[in-house]
Amino acid sequence: MARDTILIVEDDDDSRVKLTEIFRDKYKIQAVSNEKEGIDILRKHVASIAVVLVNIMIPARENFQVMRGLREKRFMNRIPFMMLTDEQTTEHEKKGYEYGIVGFIRKPFHPEVVKQLVDNVIEVFQYRTQLEVMVKNQTEKLKKQNAMLKIMAEKQRHTKEVLITSLSNIVEFRNLESEQHIKRIRELTFCLGTSVMKLYPEYELTEEKIDLIGWASCLHDIGKIVIPDNIILKAGKLTADEYDVIKSHTTKGAEIIEKVIHLENKEFCDYAYDIARHHHEKYDGNGYPDELKGEEISIAAQIVSLVDVYDALTSKRIYKAAYNTDKAYQMVMSGQSGTFSQKLLKAFTEAREEFESIVKKYCDN
Image 1 (cartoon, rainbow, N blue to C red):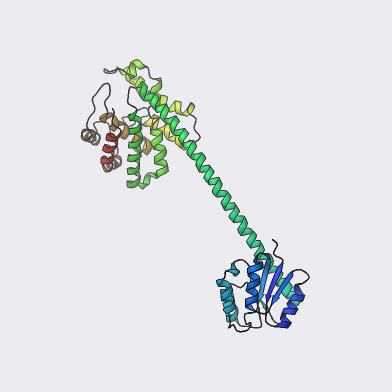
Image 2: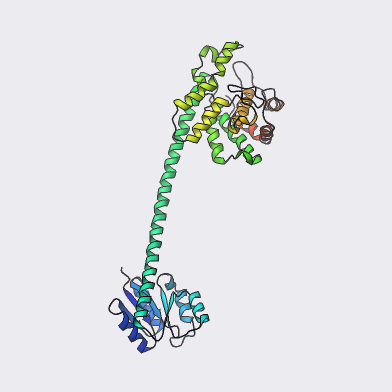
């Protein structure tokens, strides 16, 4: 419904007539002499009223009581109100604006000035209303789009997780390791990553990054797919040449992730590549394949390296029995299974009880 009506609430007959004459050519006019009639019209025709021109000194009311009543009935949130007055004081204007009026029309009326002033107020207020509606509609639209994107992201995440789990399970199947192994690696990585995040903000880890690192850790041994069975399943001691082949699973894994596994999340792929290639690097530089040293090794690869060692120690393998968690903890801390940074060992110590709970939860059958 178009807002094409001006409501005039004015007890002075001459003023009502003059204002009606000024606006009758462009607007429909509702002119009344008291507050009660004005409110009745507002209630019945609020959707069609473009502006209200009101005299605050109408009979039997003092000062701004009329405006107080109109504001309490919430009419002023929907329609602009302008004051008809012959007052000239700054205090009077200040109080009027505090009550929510948008402008003053002073007596005696100058038709062209009054007409332009009211037209401007109506135009601005209606533009503001349209803008508010537009913003509200856009906000609702964005909410729906965000909800849809969230659903799509969850579906994509689920697809990614299924793919990663399937690929990692293939590796573990060939390696004769239990299906619980990959779950332990993932959960232990989440756990240690969270501990590092809390202790060492300089690594700039976040929950989102830890989630990616945890899932990327599932692919740390993907390169073992190309290692021959007679080597990967050998129960006895490996020859030097066979050990070199085993070590190549790091570079082969990185190559598979780079050239074969195509996922849209580049950050995840970067983590997966780095972890696959560098999870056997050691802090003292005695690891492989690139002999990285110290902080040359990314924190993601450092985390998965310690997790992989701990899981290997607490798991039964074809060439060894499982150590209990106390023995495994001592071996990691003492450096018997390779050197780790003091920061990582501190984070590991803080997470020790949770590590033990994860091993118990995902124990091999």
